[in-house]
Amino acid sequence: MVTYLESDDRRAKKNVAILFFAQAVLGSQLQITIVLSGLAGAMLADTPLLATLPISLVMFTAVFGAPLASLFMGKVGRRVGFLVGACGGCIGGILATMALFISSFWLLLFSAIFTGVYYSFHGFFRFAAADTASDAFRPKAISWVLAGGLVGAMIGSEVVQNFSDLFAPTPFAGAYAVVALLNVLGAIGILFLDVPLPTSNDEDVTVGRPLGVVVRQPETIIAILCGMISYGVMALVMTSTALAMVEHGFTSGQAADVVRWHAFFMFGPSFFTGTIITRFGNLRVMGLGLLMLAASCFIGLSGVELGQFYAALIFLGFGWNFSFIGATTLLSGTYKVNERAKVQGLNDFLVLGTVSMASFLSGVLLNFYGWSMVQIAAMPALVIAALSLAWLVIYRRRRAVVTSP
Image (cartoon, rainbow, N blue to C red):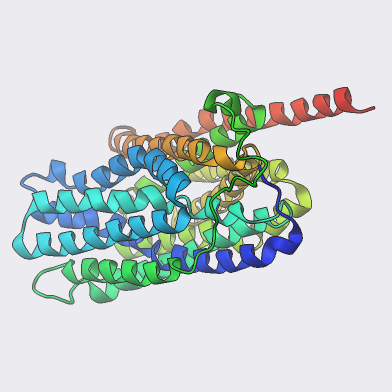
């Protein structure tokens, strides 16, 4: 890919600040949607079996929309693409508000499609941070943008708590109306983003390789695989945590606090993860992240006391942060400028698809086999990720020996 010099990082740092803001403001609607979609669906649907259909439709749209969103931004640029995503989120918030006022489940489902459009673009904030960064600054750029998710989680929580009853007696409508406003505010920030499209003067523009050639690179394969597994394991365990805690006698407030600390350790370490990657290398950081994800599963298996839920979800968040940011950094160094749209699109299609399947599987496993089986189900995938990472380390060492004079 194009190598930016450290002197160019003034633009990159400005973009990181803008994307941090966008991750915080626009990203806050993810938590709002996750919390409220099931509740609104249960209130409007004819049967409880359809209560989670709105959030499922959000994920379905995002999975298949991500490759299209990436290709679209490859043609028109990051700024236009992210503005389209914000428009989708705004429309989704407005339609959801209307659906609650007129008690229409079908309109709520229609709103979920537009929210899914937003989500299709949202995942590319981290890649946009890397687009103009030098090799040395790239890990920090990616991790600092993801750190905005911590602020977004706090904003989302406050919106749910303080605005859900704004238009009482119509529940949740106020929070969805705030979602629409958040997208307008986030779009204003995106207007200042400065990520140029490749030009004819760029040496990499005329050297694009077929997608199959790019994804057959060992680094690309391992980056995508570890990204899928780290995010999938996190979704598998996190999705059923609140339900498992309530089943074991804890209050919804206690469950919410555990999830809140999980979110803190998902995004909080991002303020220094990039520095750690620069110091120790992304493969070591990815390995440590996978180890912490495994530790989370073993803690979950050890018992169902409150402290064990806290510890398991804290390790889960920390492990996701290290392994996912490491995988993103690894992937960002495997393609040229004019290859990034198709490679990033494929990556997020696979990652979001894995997250969707893991979220669905989580509920099934908890319902039929219990909390322990959720942890056990995650372990084979973690073993595969660890073995693949070890293979890449050996491959690099052998390649270094062969190419050394």
